Image (cartoon, rainbow, N blue to C red; front, side, top):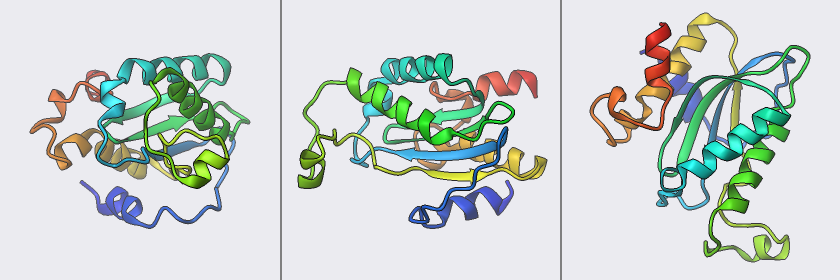
Length: 169
């Protein structure tokens, strides 16, 4: 696999300046606040519901997706003329958070802002520039469960678009 996706993903997630390309294709990493949690796979139906409801209101195409216990990676293509992925992520995170039971630890700042302590506040995004990058990021996503030691073969991970993608590739 090309080092492009690994190198890009390993960079710091602290750069908050966002690139917005209407109708663009983007790679995302979204992470739970508790990196030891398995909430995303334990509550996968709630995550799927939040994504489905968001896509009904704010359409986007899912090119690749893998949900791991504490984080997820995906590639989306937005509709022509639309670059508003932030609102979509806010909707998905909020929709998921409203469905899962309370009880997670919260910092004083989250309590003061009346926020749940489920998600890291930010997400990482990268605008995909060409076919080579697109393939590298999709491969990165589908092999991520293997990288994290969850399965030996990406085909064995149930929370991924690997199967759908391999049928059309």
